[in-house]
Amino acid sequence: MTGAVTSGNAHPAAEGTVRTPRLTLDFFHDVVCGWCFNLSPRLRSLTQMFDLDVRHHTVVLQDSPARMAAVFGSAAAAKATILGHWAACAAASDDPARFAIDRMRAAPFDYPHGLPAALACQVAQQLGGHDGHWRLFDALQSAHLGEARNIADAAVLVDVAASAGFDADRFREGLTDARTHRAVDADRALARRLQVRAVPAVLVRETGAWLRNGPLADLHAQLQREHDAWAGALATGGSVGP
Image 1 (cartoon, one colour):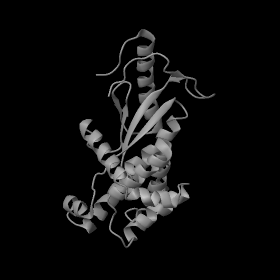
Image 2 (image 1 turned 135 degrees about the vertical axis):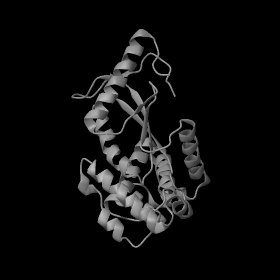
Image 3 (image 1 turned 30 degrees about the vertical axis):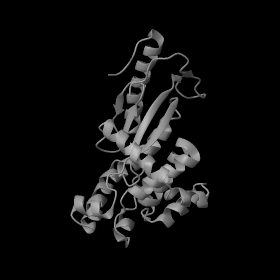
Image 4 (image 1 turned 90 degrees about the vertical axis):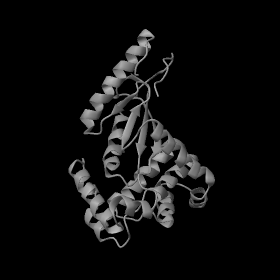
């Protein structure tokens, strides 16, 4: 996904931010992913430092209770294993207290698979574009990882969406719309085509580089390199990436 070099790509940056040509980031994520929970606020911070167009793509690692049991051995084993992952994510978080590990361990429901939340994010995108997708993605992650709510429950999805400013009736209808399922399938197909095997994954579309998840300062340094490469290509009429 290497962008062609064109003119007119420079956009004025707000005061106090890095002046830069616009970069497009393709952010592949799963609502149930703790590493995504760490990365999303860092990406939001980067949008204040660079001129970024963040495009969101849902990647469902396990799409049913049966798949959860097949991967982890049982529903109980799935929850125990994933909460171990949560602990590792919390240790690497800018705010470890965001992770409600004990509350999720005590929750009476099986650990939720990712398909219902992916459908919800696609409805949010239909109603509010990529900004809407991101708004609901963050709200669902907070509900799931921060409040230990069951985001496999459609009623919970609608409640979170309504709290995030979406019309509850339109949102509820969207969850069962065939277009929503096709959108999830399209993002999964794109992830396969780009060989995305784990989330989070962030592609800088103009240069073809993949960002490595890490602290904000490291992400900033990576993005600065891609910005400089793209700015140089625009200045010389060359190209960047594979």
